[in-house]
Amino acid sequence: IDKKIDKILQKYPPKVKKNRIKHMLTKDSEVGQEIQANTRTIPGIISNRGCCFAGCKGVVLGPLKDVVHIVHGPIGCSYYTWGTRRHKGRSEKGESNFLSYCFSTDMQESDIVFGGEKRLRQAVKEAYEIFKPEAITISSTCPVGLIGDDIHAVARDAQAEFGIQVMAFDCEGYKGVSQSAGHHIANNVLMRDVIGTGDAEMKQYAINVMGEYNIGGDGWEISRILGKIGYHIVSVMTGDGTYKELKSAHKADLNLVQCHRSINYIAEMIEIKYGTPWLKVNFVGIAGTIESLRNTAKYFGDETLIKRTEEVIVEELKEIKESMEMYKKICEGKTALLFVGGSRAHHYQGLLKELGVETVVAGYEFGHRDDYEGRDIIPHIKLDADSRNIPDLHVEKDEKNYRVYLSPEKLAELKKEMPLGQYKGLIQEMEDGSYVIDDLNHFESEELLKALKPSLFCSGIKDKYVAQKMGIFSKQLHSYDYSGPYAGFKGAVIFGKDISMGMNTPTWGFITPPWKQDALLEGEVIEEVAT
Ligand code: CFM
Ligand code: HCA
Image 1 (cartoon, rainbow, N blue to C red):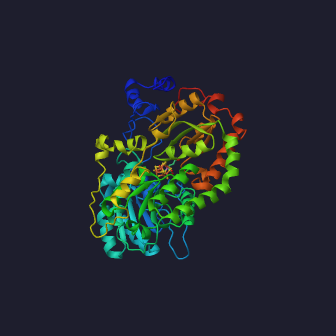
Image 2: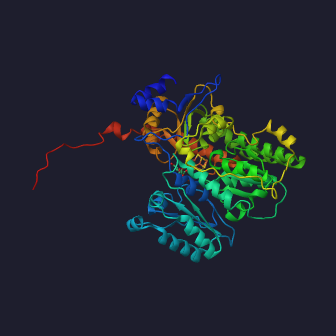
Image 3: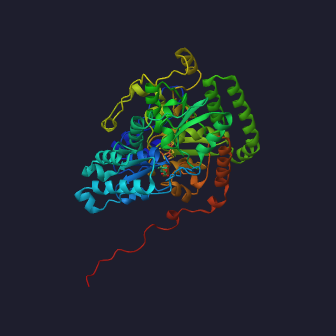
Protein backbone atom coordinates (compact mmCIF):
# COMPACT_ATOMS: atom_id res chain seq x y z
CA ILE A 1 0.00 0.00 0.00
CA ASP A 2 1.38 3.43 -0.79
CA LYS A 3 2.33 6.37 1.42
CA LYS A 4 -0.94 8.29 1.29
CA ILE A 5 -2.93 5.32 2.51
CA ASP A 6 -0.30 4.35 5.05
CA LYS A 7 -0.52 7.80 6.60
CA ILE A 8 -4.24 7.35 7.13
CA LEU A 9 -3.71 3.94 8.67
CA GLN A 10 -1.14 5.28 11.15
CA LYS A 11 -3.98 6.65 13.25
CA TYR A 12 -5.27 3.15 13.99
CA PRO A 13 -4.18 0.86 16.83
CA PRO A 14 -1.87 -1.84 15.36
CA LYS A 15 -4.52 -4.60 15.39
CA VAL A 16 -7.03 -2.47 13.52
CA LYS A 17 -4.40 -1.39 11.01
CA LYS A 18 -3.46 -5.01 10.39
CA ASN A 19 -7.09 -5.82 9.65
CA ARG A 20 -7.89 -2.81 7.48
CA ILE A 21 -4.80 -3.09 5.32
CA LYS A 22 -6.06 -6.43 3.98
CA HIS A 23 -9.15 -4.63 2.63
CA MET A 24 -7.07 -2.21 0.53
CA LEU A 25 -4.84 -2.35 -2.50
CA THR A 26 -3.14 -0.14 -5.04
CA LYS A 27 -3.93 -1.50 -8.47
CA ASP A 28 -0.96 -3.09 -10.15
CA SER A 29 -1.73 -5.02 -13.32
CA GLU A 30 1.67 -6.73 -13.24
CA VAL A 31 0.72 -8.97 -10.31
CA GLY A 32 -2.32 -10.99 -9.26
CA GLN A 33 -4.01 -9.08 -6.43
CA GLU A 34 -6.12 -10.30 -3.55
CA ILE A 35 -8.42 -8.34 -1.31
CA GLN A 36 -10.26 -9.27 1.85
CA ALA A 37 -14.02 -8.77 1.65
CA ASN A 38 -17.33 -9.96 3.12
CA THR A 39 -15.90 -10.10 6.64
CA ARG A 40 -17.12 -8.42 9.82
CA THR A 41 -16.69 -4.69 10.23
CA ILE A 42 -14.47 -3.98 13.24
CA PRO A 43 -16.68 -3.08 16.23
CA GLY A 44 -16.54 0.63 16.94
CA ILE A 45 -15.89 1.59 13.33
CA ILE A 46 -18.69 3.45 11.55
CA SER A 47 -19.04 2.07 8.05
CA ASN A 48 -21.85 2.49 5.50
CA ARG A 49 -23.09 -1.07 5.58
CA GLY A 50 -26.72 -1.95 6.11
CA CYS A 51 -28.22 -5.18 7.44
CA CYS A 52 -29.50 -8.55 6.27
CA PHE A 53 -33.12 -7.39 6.49
CA ALA A 54 -32.28 -4.44 4.19
CA GLY A 55 -30.76 -6.79 1.60
CA CYS A 56 -33.68 -9.22 1.68
CA LYS A 57 -36.80 -7.12 2.10
CA GLY A 58 -35.46 -3.77 0.97
CA VAL A 59 -33.39 -4.79 -2.02
CA VAL A 60 -34.55 -8.06 -3.56
CA LEU A 61 -38.19 -8.51 -2.46
CA GLY A 62 -39.31 -4.91 -2.07
CA PRO A 63 -39.61 -3.99 -5.77
CA LEU A 64 -42.07 -6.85 -6.54
CA LYS A 65 -45.12 -4.63 -6.84
CA ASP A 66 -48.04 -7.08 -6.87
CA VAL A 67 -46.95 -8.53 -3.51
CA VAL A 68 -47.74 -7.20 -0.04
CA HIS A 69 -44.45 -7.18 1.88
CA ILE A 70 -45.10 -7.35 5.60
CA VAL A 71 -42.28 -6.40 7.93
CA HIS A 72 -42.53 -8.24 11.22
CA GLY A 73 -40.86 -5.92 13.67
CA PRO A 74 -40.84 -2.52 15.31
CA ILE A 75 -42.05 0.27 13.07
CA GLY A 76 -38.65 1.91 12.50
CA CYS A 77 -37.35 -0.92 10.29
CA SER A 78 -40.19 -0.18 7.86
CA TYR A 79 -40.59 3.50 8.19
CA TYR A 80 -36.97 4.51 7.71
CA THR A 81 -36.72 2.56 4.46
CA TRP A 82 -40.15 3.46 3.10
CA GLY A 83 -39.47 4.49 -0.51
CA THR A 84 -35.96 5.83 0.12
CA ARG A 85 -34.33 3.34 -2.25
CA ARG A 86 -36.36 4.73 -5.15
CA HIS A 87 -37.11 1.40 -6.82
CA LYS A 88 -39.88 2.69 -9.01
CA GLY A 89 -42.89 0.75 -10.21
CA ARG A 90 -45.95 1.55 -12.26
CA SER A 91 -48.83 -0.61 -13.29
CA GLU A 92 -51.18 -0.81 -16.19
CA LYS A 93 -54.84 -0.32 -15.44
CA GLY A 94 -56.25 -3.13 -13.37
CA GLU A 95 -52.87 -4.42 -12.10
CA SER A 96 -51.97 -4.12 -8.47
CA ASN A 97 -49.14 -1.98 -7.23
CA PHE A 98 -48.55 -1.83 -3.50
CA LEU A 99 -45.18 -0.07 -3.63
CA SER A 100 -46.34 3.13 -2.03
CA TYR A 101 -47.65 1.32 1.06
CA CYS A 102 -45.72 0.48 4.20
CA PHE A 103 -46.83 -2.76 5.91
CA SER A 104 -45.54 -3.45 9.39
CA THR A 105 -46.68 -5.41 12.44
CA ASP A 106 -45.49 -2.45 14.53
CA MET A 107 -44.27 -4.69 17.39
CA GLN A 108 -44.55 -3.20 20.81
CA GLU A 109 -42.78 -4.05 24.05
CA SER A 110 -45.53 -6.49 25.04
CA ASP A 111 -45.07 -8.42 21.75
CA ILE A 112 -41.37 -8.72 22.43
CA VAL A 113 -42.06 -10.03 25.92
CA PHE A 114 -45.04 -12.31 25.20
CA GLY A 115 -44.43 -13.13 21.51
CA GLY A 116 -45.56 -11.48 18.29
CA GLU A 117 -47.11 -14.36 16.34
CA LYS A 118 -50.69 -13.37 17.10
CA ARG A 119 -50.05 -9.90 15.84
CA LEU A 120 -48.42 -11.25 12.69
CA ARG A 121 -51.38 -13.58 11.97
CA GLN A 122 -53.70 -10.62 12.29
CA ALA A 123 -51.53 -8.49 9.98
CA VAL A 124 -51.48 -11.17 7.26
CA LYS A 125 -55.26 -11.57 7.55
CA GLU A 126 -55.88 -7.83 7.27
CA ALA A 127 -53.45 -7.49 4.36
CA TYR A 128 -55.19 -10.31 2.52
CA GLU A 129 -58.72 -9.08 3.17
CA ILE A 130 -58.06 -5.46 2.27
CA PHE A 131 -55.65 -5.82 -0.65
CA LYS A 132 -56.15 -9.31 -2.14
CA PRO A 133 -52.53 -9.43 -3.38
CA GLU A 134 -51.01 -12.13 -5.61
CA ALA A 135 -48.77 -13.16 -2.72
CA ILE A 136 -47.55 -12.01 0.68
CA THR A 137 -44.03 -11.96 2.08
CA ILE A 138 -43.12 -11.83 5.76
CA SER A 139 -39.66 -10.50 6.60
CA SER A 140 -38.15 -10.90 10.06
CA THR A 141 -36.34 -8.08 11.79
CA CYS A 142 -33.81 -8.55 14.61
CA PRO A 143 -36.14 -9.04 17.62
CA VAL A 144 -38.14 -11.76 15.85
CA GLY A 145 -35.09 -14.00 15.72
CA LEU A 146 -34.30 -13.28 19.36
CA ILE A 147 -37.76 -14.10 20.73
CA GLY A 148 -38.28 -17.01 18.31
CA ASP A 149 -41.63 -16.21 16.67
CA ASP A 150 -42.40 -19.01 14.21
CA ILE A 151 -43.03 -16.98 11.07
CA HIS A 152 -43.03 -20.14 8.95
CA ALA A 153 -45.98 -21.61 10.86
CA VAL A 154 -47.87 -18.35 10.43
CA ALA A 155 -47.09 -18.35 6.69
CA ARG A 156 -48.15 -21.99 6.29
CA ASP A 157 -51.46 -21.48 8.06
CA ALA A 158 -52.22 -18.27 6.17
CA GLN A 159 -51.43 -19.91 2.86
CA ALA A 160 -53.86 -22.73 3.62
CA GLU A 161 -56.53 -20.32 4.80
CA PHE A 162 -56.35 -17.70 2.04
CA GLY A 163 -55.20 -19.78 -0.92
CA ILE A 164 -52.38 -17.44 -1.96
CA GLN A 165 -48.66 -17.95 -1.52
CA VAL A 166 -47.33 -16.59 1.78
CA MET A 167 -43.55 -16.71 2.07
CA ALA A 168 -41.52 -16.25 5.23
CA PHE A 169 -37.93 -14.96 5.23
CA ASP A 170 -35.49 -15.46 8.12
CA CYS A 171 -33.66 -12.26 7.35
CA GLU A 172 -33.08 -10.89 10.85
CA GLY A 173 -30.88 -7.83 10.55
CA TYR A 174 -27.97 -9.29 12.49
CA LYS A 175 -27.47 -12.31 10.18
CA GLY A 176 -24.23 -12.34 8.22
CA VAL A 177 -22.05 -9.26 8.04
CA SER A 178 -24.06 -6.98 5.73
CA GLN A 179 -26.97 -6.69 3.30
CA SER A 180 -25.37 -9.43 1.24
CA ALA A 181 -26.72 -12.20 3.49
CA GLY A 182 -30.22 -10.91 2.83
CA HIS A 183 -29.80 -11.12 -0.93
CA HIS A 184 -28.89 -14.78 -0.57
CA ILE A 185 -31.86 -15.58 1.71
CA ALA A 186 -34.31 -13.83 -0.67
CA ASN A 187 -32.78 -15.59 -3.70
CA ASN A 188 -33.19 -19.01 -2.06
CA VAL A 189 -36.89 -18.63 -1.26
CA LEU A 190 -37.79 -17.09 -4.64
CA MET A 191 -35.99 -19.96 -6.36
CA ARG A 192 -37.55 -22.64 -4.18
CA ASP A 193 -41.14 -21.35 -4.07
CA VAL A 194 -41.80 -19.05 -7.03
CA ILE A 195 -39.60 -19.57 -10.09
CA GLY A 196 -40.77 -22.66 -11.96
CA THR A 197 -44.40 -22.53 -10.80
CA GLY A 198 -45.74 -20.60 -13.83
CA ASP A 199 -46.41 -21.53 -17.40
CA ALA A 200 -46.64 -18.27 -19.33
CA GLU A 201 -46.49 -18.27 -23.11
CA MET A 202 -42.96 -17.47 -24.43
CA LYS A 203 -42.22 -15.42 -27.52
CA GLN A 204 -39.07 -15.26 -29.64
CA TYR A 205 -35.86 -14.02 -27.90
CA ALA A 206 -37.18 -14.57 -24.37
CA ILE A 207 -34.94 -13.10 -21.67
CA ASN A 208 -34.98 -12.26 -17.96
CA VAL A 209 -33.30 -9.08 -16.78
CA MET A 210 -31.76 -9.98 -13.42
CA GLY A 211 -30.25 -7.79 -10.72
CA GLU A 212 -31.93 -4.66 -12.06
CA TYR A 213 -34.04 -2.82 -9.51
CA ASN A 214 -35.32 0.15 -11.50
CA ILE A 215 -33.71 2.74 -9.25
CA GLY A 216 -34.66 6.15 -10.63
CA GLY A 217 -36.19 4.34 -13.65
CA ASP A 218 -32.97 2.58 -14.86
CA GLY A 219 -34.90 -0.59 -15.63
CA TRP A 220 -37.38 1.32 -17.76
CA GLU A 221 -34.61 2.71 -19.94
CA ILE A 222 -33.03 -0.75 -20.27
CA SER A 223 -36.40 -2.33 -21.13
CA ARG A 224 -37.11 0.42 -23.64
CA ILE A 225 -33.93 -0.41 -25.56
CA LEU A 226 -34.38 -4.19 -25.34
CA GLY A 227 -38.03 -3.86 -26.38
CA LYS A 228 -37.09 -1.67 -29.34
CA ILE A 229 -34.69 -4.35 -30.57
CA GLY A 230 -37.37 -7.01 -30.23
CA TYR A 231 -36.68 -9.00 -27.06
CA HIS A 232 -39.44 -10.58 -25.05
CA ILE A 233 -38.76 -9.68 -21.42
CA VAL A 234 -40.20 -12.53 -19.38
CA SER A 235 -39.41 -10.99 -15.98
CA VAL A 236 -37.27 -8.34 -14.36
CA MET A 237 -35.66 -9.25 -11.04
CA THR A 238 -36.98 -7.37 -9.42
CA GLY A 239 -37.32 -3.70 -10.46
CA ASP A 240 -40.90 -2.84 -11.41
CA GLY A 241 -41.28 -6.62 -11.39
CA THR A 242 -44.15 -8.89 -10.53
CA TYR A 243 -44.57 -12.16 -8.69
CA LYS A 244 -46.79 -13.28 -11.55
CA GLU A 245 -44.00 -12.93 -14.15
CA LEU A 246 -41.34 -14.36 -11.86
CA LYS A 247 -43.18 -17.68 -11.77
CA SER A 248 -42.37 -18.34 -15.43
CA ALA A 249 -38.81 -16.98 -15.39
CA HIS A 250 -37.42 -20.51 -15.85
CA LYS A 251 -38.82 -20.57 -19.39
CA ALA A 252 -36.63 -17.77 -20.81
CA ASP A 253 -33.81 -18.56 -23.27
CA LEU A 254 -31.20 -16.37 -21.59
CA ASN A 255 -30.70 -14.53 -18.31
CA LEU A 256 -29.01 -11.13 -18.32
CA VAL A 257 -27.28 -10.33 -15.03
CA GLN A 258 -26.76 -6.64 -14.24
CA CYS A 259 -25.96 -6.68 -10.49
CA HIS A 260 -23.93 -9.82 -9.94
CA ARG A 261 -23.76 -9.56 -6.15
CA SER A 262 -27.46 -9.54 -5.39
CA ILE A 263 -28.76 -12.13 -7.86
CA ASN A 264 -25.93 -14.48 -8.89
CA TYR A 265 -27.42 -17.23 -6.71
CA ILE A 266 -30.66 -17.36 -8.75
CA ALA A 267 -28.75 -17.08 -12.04
CA GLU A 268 -26.58 -20.06 -11.07
CA MET A 269 -29.45 -22.14 -9.71
CA ILE A 270 -31.62 -21.59 -12.81
CA GLU A 271 -28.73 -22.76 -14.99
CA ILE A 272 -28.30 -25.94 -12.95
CA LYS A 273 -32.01 -26.69 -12.68
CA TYR A 274 -33.37 -25.53 -16.03
CA GLY A 275 -30.32 -25.19 -18.28
CA THR A 276 -30.65 -21.45 -19.00
CA PRO A 277 -27.23 -19.75 -19.24
CA TRP A 278 -26.62 -16.27 -17.83
CA LEU A 279 -24.71 -13.42 -19.38
CA LYS A 280 -23.07 -10.66 -17.35
CA VAL A 281 -24.16 -7.31 -18.74
CA ASN A 282 -23.63 -3.68 -17.76
CA PHE A 283 -26.13 -1.16 -19.03
CA VAL A 284 -24.44 1.77 -17.27
CA GLY A 285 -22.35 3.76 -19.76
CA ILE A 286 -22.52 3.81 -23.52
CA ALA A 287 -19.74 1.32 -24.29
CA GLY A 288 -21.13 -1.04 -21.64
CA THR A 289 -24.63 -0.80 -23.07
CA ILE A 290 -23.45 -1.40 -26.63
CA GLU A 291 -21.29 -4.37 -25.65
CA SER A 292 -24.13 -5.89 -23.62
CA LEU A 293 -26.57 -5.51 -26.52
CA ARG A 294 -24.12 -7.01 -29.02
CA ASN A 295 -23.33 -9.99 -26.79
CA THR A 296 -27.02 -10.67 -26.19
CA ALA A 297 -27.76 -10.62 -29.92
CA LYS A 298 -24.77 -12.82 -30.63
CA TYR A 299 -25.99 -15.39 -28.11
CA PHE A 300 -29.19 -15.78 -30.11
CA GLY A 301 -27.09 -15.69 -33.26
CA ASP A 302 -29.95 -14.60 -35.49
CA GLU A 303 -28.85 -12.31 -38.38
CA THR A 304 -32.00 -10.14 -38.29
CA LEU A 305 -31.59 -9.62 -34.54
CA ILE A 306 -27.92 -8.71 -34.95
CA LYS A 307 -28.79 -6.26 -37.73
CA ARG A 308 -31.64 -4.73 -35.72
CA THR A 309 -29.27 -4.31 -32.74
CA GLU A 310 -26.81 -2.33 -34.87
CA GLU A 311 -29.62 -0.15 -36.25
CA VAL A 312 -30.89 0.67 -32.77
CA ILE A 313 -27.34 1.46 -31.57
CA VAL A 314 -26.81 3.90 -34.48
CA GLU A 315 -30.20 5.54 -33.89
CA GLU A 316 -29.67 5.93 -30.15
CA LEU A 317 -26.11 7.22 -30.49
CA LYS A 318 -27.21 9.85 -32.95
CA GLU A 319 -29.66 11.22 -30.43
CA ILE A 320 -27.19 11.59 -27.57
CA LYS A 321 -23.90 12.34 -29.33
CA GLU A 322 -24.02 16.12 -29.12
CA SER A 323 -25.06 16.27 -25.46
CA MET A 324 -22.44 13.73 -24.42
CA GLU A 325 -19.72 15.70 -26.18
CA MET A 326 -20.84 18.87 -24.45
CA TYR A 327 -20.83 17.27 -20.98
CA LYS A 328 -17.50 15.63 -21.66
CA LYS A 329 -16.00 19.05 -22.36
CA ILE A 330 -17.28 20.24 -18.99
CA CYS A 331 -16.17 17.17 -17.00
CA GLU A 332 -12.87 16.34 -18.73
CA GLY A 333 -9.91 15.97 -16.36
CA LYS A 334 -11.92 15.58 -13.15
CA THR A 335 -11.42 12.74 -10.67
CA ALA A 336 -13.88 10.63 -8.71
CA LEU A 337 -14.02 8.48 -5.60
CA LEU A 338 -16.69 5.76 -5.84
CA PHE A 339 -18.02 3.93 -2.86
CA VAL A 340 -21.28 2.02 -3.31
CA GLY A 341 -22.77 -1.34 -2.26
CA GLY A 342 -21.79 -4.27 -4.40
CA SER A 343 -21.78 -3.39 -8.07
CA ARG A 344 -22.19 0.27 -8.90
CA ALA A 345 -18.64 1.16 -7.85
CA HIS A 346 -17.67 -1.02 -10.80
CA HIS A 347 -20.50 -0.25 -13.22
CA TYR A 348 -20.12 3.53 -13.14
CA GLN A 349 -16.43 3.59 -14.03
CA GLY A 350 -17.07 3.21 -17.76
CA LEU A 351 -19.63 6.00 -17.86
CA LEU A 352 -17.35 8.31 -15.89
CA LYS A 353 -14.51 7.56 -18.30
CA GLU A 354 -16.77 8.42 -21.23
CA LEU A 355 -17.31 11.80 -19.56
CA GLY A 356 -13.57 12.27 -19.08
CA VAL A 357 -13.63 11.57 -15.33
CA GLU A 358 -10.97 9.31 -13.85
CA THR A 359 -11.82 6.99 -10.95
CA VAL A 360 -9.05 7.26 -8.35
CA VAL A 361 -10.63 5.14 -5.60
CA ALA A 362 -13.38 2.54 -5.79
CA GLY A 363 -14.82 0.09 -3.34
CA TYR A 364 -17.83 -1.86 -2.20
CA GLU A 365 -19.68 -1.84 1.10
CA PHE A 366 -20.38 -5.57 0.99
CA GLY A 367 -19.18 -7.08 -2.32
CA HIS A 368 -17.47 -10.46 -2.03
CA ARG A 369 -14.00 -11.28 -3.33
CA ASP A 370 -15.48 -12.46 -6.65
CA ASP A 371 -17.03 -9.01 -7.18
CA TYR A 372 -13.50 -7.59 -6.90
CA GLU A 373 -11.31 -10.31 -8.34
CA GLY A 374 -13.69 -12.20 -10.64
CA ARG A 375 -15.55 -15.48 -10.31
CA ASP A 376 -12.48 -17.61 -11.01
CA ILE A 377 -11.41 -17.24 -7.39
CA ILE A 378 -14.70 -18.56 -5.94
CA PRO A 379 -13.28 -22.05 -5.21
CA HIS A 380 -10.48 -20.41 -3.19
CA ILE A 381 -12.65 -18.22 -0.97
CA LYS A 382 -12.35 -19.25 2.67
CA LEU A 383 -15.74 -19.78 4.33
CA ASP A 384 -15.94 -18.20 7.76
CA ALA A 385 -18.49 -18.63 10.52
CA ASP A 386 -20.57 -15.74 9.24
CA SER A 387 -20.95 -17.04 5.70
CA ARG A 388 -21.55 -20.58 6.93
CA ASN A 389 -24.58 -19.21 8.75
CA ILE A 390 -26.36 -18.41 5.49
CA PRO A 391 -27.83 -21.59 4.06
CA ASP A 392 -27.09 -22.62 0.48
CA LEU A 393 -30.04 -23.99 -1.47
CA HIS A 394 -29.18 -27.19 -3.24
CA VAL A 395 -30.89 -27.58 -6.63
CA GLU A 396 -30.81 -30.39 -9.14
CA LYS A 397 -31.59 -30.78 -12.80
CA ASP A 398 -35.33 -30.70 -13.44
CA GLU A 399 -35.63 -33.46 -16.05
CA LYS A 400 -39.03 -32.29 -17.25
CA ASN A 401 -38.30 -28.60 -17.67
CA TYR A 402 -34.56 -28.63 -18.48
CA ARG A 403 -33.94 -27.12 -21.89
CA VAL A 404 -30.85 -26.67 -23.98
CA TYR A 405 -31.06 -23.56 -26.14
CA LEU A 406 -27.54 -23.80 -27.53
CA SER A 407 -25.48 -26.94 -28.01
CA PRO A 408 -22.69 -27.39 -25.44
CA GLU A 409 -20.14 -26.87 -28.25
CA LYS A 410 -21.69 -23.56 -29.33
CA LEU A 411 -21.93 -22.43 -25.71
CA ALA A 412 -18.27 -23.27 -25.07
CA GLU A 413 -17.33 -21.30 -28.17
CA LEU A 414 -19.35 -18.25 -27.08
CA LYS A 415 -17.88 -18.40 -23.58
CA LYS A 416 -14.52 -17.50 -25.11
CA GLU A 417 -16.00 -14.32 -26.56
CA MET A 418 -18.35 -13.01 -23.88
CA PRO A 419 -18.92 -13.24 -20.10
CA LEU A 420 -21.38 -16.14 -20.17
CA GLY A 421 -21.56 -17.47 -16.62
CA GLN A 422 -18.55 -15.30 -15.89
CA TYR A 423 -17.81 -12.02 -14.11
CA LYS A 424 -14.35 -10.51 -14.11
CA GLY A 425 -14.88 -8.11 -11.20
CA LEU A 426 -14.01 -4.53 -10.39
CA ILE A 427 -10.22 -4.67 -10.05
CA GLN A 428 -9.61 -5.41 -13.75
CA GLU A 429 -11.44 -2.18 -14.67
CA MET A 430 -9.18 0.06 -12.56
CA GLU A 431 -6.14 1.97 -13.78
CA ASP A 432 -2.74 1.15 -12.30
CA GLY A 433 -2.02 3.28 -9.26
CA SER A 434 -5.68 3.74 -8.30
CA TYR A 435 -6.94 2.42 -4.96
CA VAL A 436 -9.46 -0.32 -4.25
CA ILE A 437 -10.86 -0.20 -0.70
CA ASP A 438 -13.40 -2.57 0.79
CA ASP A 439 -15.91 -1.61 3.53
CA LEU A 440 -14.60 1.95 3.64
CA ASN A 441 -15.50 3.77 6.84
CA HIS A 442 -16.29 7.35 7.68
CA PHE A 443 -12.88 8.15 9.11
CA GLU A 444 -11.10 6.78 6.03
CA SER A 445 -13.53 8.57 3.66
CA GLU A 446 -12.80 11.93 5.24
CA GLU A 447 -9.05 11.36 5.24
CA LEU A 448 -9.10 10.21 1.60
CA LEU A 449 -11.11 13.26 0.57
CA LYS A 450 -8.54 15.48 2.26
CA ALA A 451 -5.57 13.63 0.75
CA LEU A 452 -6.82 13.14 -2.81
CA LYS A 453 -9.23 16.09 -3.20
CA PRO A 454 -11.39 14.42 -5.87
CA SER A 455 -13.86 16.56 -7.83
CA LEU A 456 -16.63 14.06 -7.28
CA PHE A 457 -17.56 11.82 -4.37
CA CYS A 458 -20.04 9.13 -5.44
CA SER A 459 -21.54 7.52 -2.39
CA GLY A 460 -24.73 7.46 -0.32
CA ILE A 461 -26.81 9.44 2.12
CA LYS A 462 -24.69 8.54 5.14
CA ASP A 463 -21.60 10.45 4.04
CA LYS A 464 -22.80 12.75 1.26
CA TYR A 465 -23.09 15.85 3.39
CA VAL A 466 -19.73 15.42 5.09
CA ALA A 467 -18.13 15.66 1.64
CA GLN A 468 -20.27 18.60 0.60
CA LYS A 469 -19.42 20.50 3.77
CA MET A 470 -15.80 20.04 2.76
CA GLY A 471 -16.67 21.67 -0.57
CA ILE A 472 -16.66 18.48 -2.65
CA PHE A 473 -19.68 17.68 -4.80
CA SER A 474 -21.26 14.39 -3.83
CA LYS A 475 -23.57 12.41 -6.09
CA GLN A 476 -25.55 9.64 -4.45
CA LEU A 477 -25.09 6.55 -6.57
CA HIS A 478 -27.76 4.69 -4.60
CA SER A 479 -30.81 6.95 -4.85
CA TYR A 480 -29.37 9.22 -7.59
CA ASP A 481 -30.42 12.20 -5.44
CA TYR A 482 -34.00 11.99 -6.76
CA SER A 483 -32.79 12.08 -10.40
CA GLY A 484 -32.29 9.34 -13.01
CA PRO A 485 -32.50 7.19 -14.95
CA TYR A 486 -28.73 6.91 -15.41
CA ALA A 487 -28.63 3.60 -17.30
CA GLY A 488 -28.67 3.08 -21.05
CA PHE A 489 -28.21 5.74 -23.71
CA LYS A 490 -30.60 8.38 -22.46
CA GLY A 491 -29.55 7.80 -18.86
CA ALA A 492 -25.92 8.54 -19.70
CA VAL A 493 -26.90 12.05 -20.78
CA ILE A 494 -28.89 12.70 -17.61
CA PHE A 495 -25.91 11.55 -15.52
CA GLY A 496 -23.60 13.78 -17.56
CA LYS A 497 -25.87 16.75 -17.00
CA ASP A 498 -26.26 16.10 -13.26
CA ILE A 499 -22.54 15.77 -12.53
CA SER A 500 -21.62 18.67 -14.83
CA MET A 501 -23.94 20.95 -12.90
CA GLY A 502 -22.94 19.52 -9.54
CA MET A 503 -19.17 19.78 -9.96
CA ASN A 504 -19.24 23.20 -11.53
CA THR A 505 -21.57 25.13 -9.34
CA PRO A 506 -19.61 28.01 -7.79
CA THR A 507 -21.17 27.12 -4.43
CA TRP A 508 -18.24 24.86 -3.48
CA GLY A 509 -15.86 27.80 -3.42
CA PHE A 510 -17.97 29.63 -0.85
CA ILE A 511 -18.06 26.82 1.66
CA THR A 512 -16.00 26.68 4.80
CA PRO A 513 -16.73 23.56 6.81
CA PRO A 514 -18.43 24.49 10.07
CA TRP A 515 -15.71 22.75 12.08
CA LYS A 516 -13.09 25.08 10.60
CA GLN A 517 -15.05 28.17 11.60
CA ASP A 518 -16.35 27.42 15.05
CA ALA A 519 -15.63 24.98 17.77
CA LEU A 520 -18.21 22.23 17.64
CA LEU A 521 -19.05 22.66 21.31
CA GLU A 522 -19.01 25.87 23.26
CA GLY A 523 -19.56 26.65 26.89
CA GLU A 524 -17.85 26.26 30.19
CA VAL A 525 -17.91 23.49 32.67
CA ILE A 526 -19.40 24.56 35.92
CA GLU A 527 -20.05 22.74 39.10
CA GLU A 528 -23.71 21.87 39.48
CA VAL A 529 -25.25 23.39 42.56
CA ALA A 530 -28.16 21.56 44.10
CA THR A 531 -31.14 23.80 44.67
FE1 CFM B 1 -26.72 -4.48 -6.54
FE2 CFM B 1 -28.27 -2.55 -6.26
FE3 CFM B 1 -25.66 -2.41 -5.79
FE4 CFM B 1 -27.22 -3.89 -4.16
FE5 CFM B 1 -27.74 -1.83 -2.46
FE6 CFM B 1 -28.87 -0.46 -4.52
FE7 CFM B 1 -26.24 -0.37 -4.12
MO1 CFM B 1 -27.85 0.77 -2.45
S1 CFM B 1 -28.64 -4.50 -5.52
S2 CFM B 1 -25.29 -4.28 -4.93
S3 CFM B 1 -27.79 -3.94 -2.02
S4 CFM B 1 -26.68 -2.56 -7.59
S5 CFM B 1 -29.55 -0.79 -2.57
S6 CFM B 1 -29.90 -1.12 -6.35
S7 CFM B 1 -27.59 1.17 -4.65
S8 CFM B 1 -26.10 -0.61 -2.03
S9 CFM B 1 -24.42 -0.73 -5.40
C1 HCA C 1 -29.65 -0.24 1.90
C2 HCA C 1 -30.28 0.62 0.84
C3 HCA C 1 -29.35 1.62 0.20
C4 HCA C 1 -28.95 2.72 1.16
C5 HCA C 1 -28.44 3.91 0.45
C6 HCA C 1 -27.55 4.89 1.16
C7 HCA C 1 -30.07 2.21 -1.02
O1 HCA C 1 -28.48 -0.55 1.85
O2 HCA C 1 -30.38 -0.61 2.78
O3 HCA C 1 -26.87 4.57 2.12
O4 HCA C 1 -27.54 6.02 0.67
O5 HCA C 1 -29.55 2.14 -2.10
O6 HCA C 1 -31.17 2.74 -0.83
O7 HCA C 1 -28.18 0.95 -0.26
